[in-house]
Image: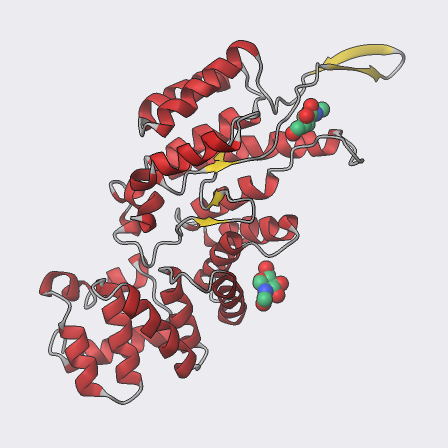
Length: 357
Ligand SMILES: *[C@@H]1O[C@H](CO)[C@@H](O)[C@H](O)[C@H]1NC(C)=O
Ligand SMILES: *[C@@H]1O[C@H](CO)[C@@H](O)[C@H](O)[C@H]1NC(C)=O
C-alpha cells in the first residue's frame, strides 16, 4: 500500500510514527517528470536512466516507497581545479564530487542495488565505505542519510544530510551560475529531507527553517514540499500559514485523498472553519474508514457540529485499545500532536463516552 512509505521503516524505532496519519512523513507523490518525490528522496545515481528509476520505485513500494529515485540529471565529474593562490603559488582545491566514476561509481551502484532490494543495512555499509573513500561525494552522504532514516537513526541522518548540504552549498559557491554549467541542483531536496528529519527529531523550528528554504529554492509549488512545510508550520503553531500551504498542496493532488488531508482538516478547525474541516475529514473518512485517527477526528468534528449521538457512535467504532490511547494526554500532545482546538473537543468526547471523567 502506497502510504506506508517511510513510516513503516521508522515505526520500529520511533514512537512518533505509531501510525501514518499524523506522521510528518508523507507519502510519495509524483511530480511532473513522473518521478516519485517524497521525504528522503533517494538521490539518483548519476546517469541512471528513467526505466531503472521506475523499477526502483516499483520494487520497494511495500517497504520504502518514499525513498525513491530522483532523476537529478546526469553530472559530469570535473577534475580537481588548480587555482591561483596569493602570490602566484598554486594549490589543489579538493573538488566536490557530484558524479562518481570508476570504482566509486561501482560501489555506489552496489549500494543502490542493495537498497532497491530492501537490504538497507548492507546498503548503509556500502555508503559508509563510499564516504570514507570519497568524503566529498555528495550522494554518498545523501544516500547514507536515507538509509539511516530508514532505520530510525534520525540524529545521524541529520548529520549525514548536513554534510551533503554543505558540500552542495560549497559547489554552488564555487560554480558561477551560467548557461550550460552544471551545479549542484539538489539543495532543495537535501533540505526537504533534513527538514523532515528535524521535524521528527525534536527540532521543530530547525525543521521549519529547512523546509522554508527548500520551498524557496524550489521556486515553484511542489506538493511534497508544501505538505511538509505546512506540517512544520502547524507544529510551530503558525496555523494560518499551515492552512494555506496545506490547501495548496491538496489542490495540486486533488484527485487522490492522502493522509495529510486529515491534518489539513484539523488545522481548518483550529482556524474556526468547521465546514471546511468537515468536508475534508469526510473525504478522508471515505477513503480510510477504519483508521482510528480518522474516526477520532471525524467524531470530534461531529461533536463540534452539535451531533453528539453520531459523534459518540463514530468514536466507539474505534476498538478499545486504540481508542483508549486518545484518552492519554501524552499520546495526544506528543505523538499525534493535535492542534489545541481538536484536543479540547476530544477531551469533551472522551468524557461523553465515559473513557475519561
Ligand atoms: C559542482 O556540481 C556539478 C554537478 O552537480 C559538477 O558537475 C561540478 O563538477 C561541480 N563543481 C565543483 C567545483 O565542485
Ligand atoms: C506557504 O508558506 C510560506 C512561508 O514559508 C508563505 O510565504 C506562503 O505565503 C505560504 N503559501 C501560501 C499559499 O499561503
